[in-house]
Length: 171
Image (cartoon, rainbow, N blue to C red):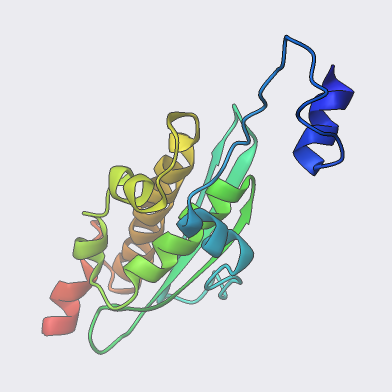
């Protein structure tokens, strides 16, 4: 039965010769945005994690094995994110979520990127419910990267609390 269904899907068997009980196999399709970001990921790579203007967020989902590293680079003059990079080990949805996140954070302040929610990423990629954890990882990675860069800059400024980058840039 499975062999016949496979041949039908490949067009090697005729539909007329089918037995009375046919099994319809429905393919699982990803949205074109997921396929695009998976096949052509944007901003893959990494920065020097010791650079005080680079924030690194490393997050993972033990349940599925996805691991995401997202880095942001802050422009010293404007306080805005001038570049972003990612490296992700995981499924296509995790890679696509990372790619979208790096595109969305560029040109924004650290305060602005903290408003990016996993639901927005999931909606943009049309992720099914079983893949929502991928967009959650992207949101968590953004938050972790911002927290890291703010902690580095606070340490450089001799402050114990992590002041937002924009405030020091406006001074």
